[in-house]
Image (cartoon, rainbow, N blue to C red; front, side, top):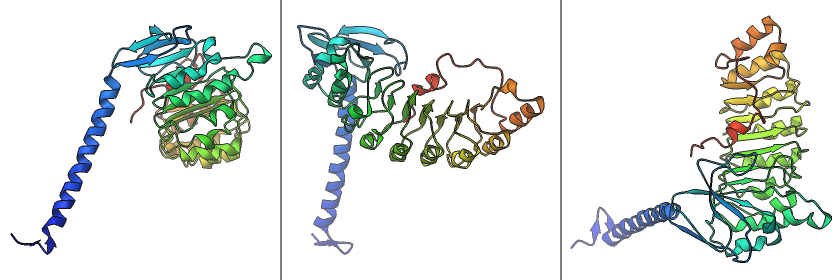
Length: 336
């Protein structure tokens, strides 16, 4: 047999082909394992002495307000066997915050979403929420973390670590200001982030650009500054932006908003943006817009100008959201 094929040793070509085949096989096995893991039964060994909450089977992603939505699967007590092919949300009870280390005994894919609702009622409980949150890092398969109306702070979120599967994070009416964001940039799949009714750390928003898949962002009533909007303008994949009720946002913010090429939804209620500046945003071809003022508060002539600037939007016909402008879109189906 000839020692050379097309000028190269035959064993060199064979090695390249074999290496390529190995890589393909490894990729196939990895994908198969991932797919199989999602459909397999999950066994969770909780303490048999006490319950630490409920496990709910949910369709889609969980609601961001109210109690757990979905069907109760099991109490988080004893050995729990979860049905295959279900998305599971963990709703901790008060006992969990006394024993958050129980998560260390669970498999890393124990559940998919978690809803934290702990508020301190006594001085000795003040640190319980922050103490518990870093233990969630054990469940590295988490897709969504809902901390709304809890005692969560930046200190605890900064200790969460990289969550490789995390898609949504919401922390409304908490002690979270956003200064934890630089510590969370390992959450590379993060798609939706919401902070409302807090005083945001505008400089920490510079970390937003390090979440390459961020598509939905809500910063409502957070004292957002022009500097903060400048940081937001670097999130090139952003499709939905809710910056309602930030009164310092004025015409100077418009050039930064125009740097968001994928933006389809923009909420500006309560801002100080003028009509001429608003018309400049027509270049984005927005499909949904919340105006600085109610549409009915503009003059008939101004209303015509608005309709001309945003022909894809129906103004004055739909009811205002019952909770906030982000609720209906925060956990909508996510395109991957």
